[in-house]
Length: 102
Image (cartoon, rainbow, N blue to C red; front, side, top):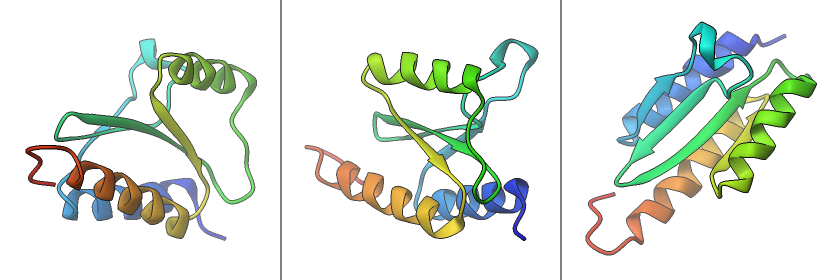
């Protein structure tokens, strides 16, 4: 079975190859926040990584809803293929922005 860390690493590295900045949100004050924040050309989104078939905790769901209410895109990813698909979709979105080098 694939671990959460393995999925995280592969998706993060894929995002970096596509020009995204990947920031791990792991401080005592970031409890419940998604694992990673991705930034490129003024675009920001979050990914909470999970092992296959695992779900966010109740508190993580609460934080995700808060971010979504603020119009941020937040994804829960439990496999590499889904993570890469999200990166590709976000990269296409950035490429369509006026003046983008995405």
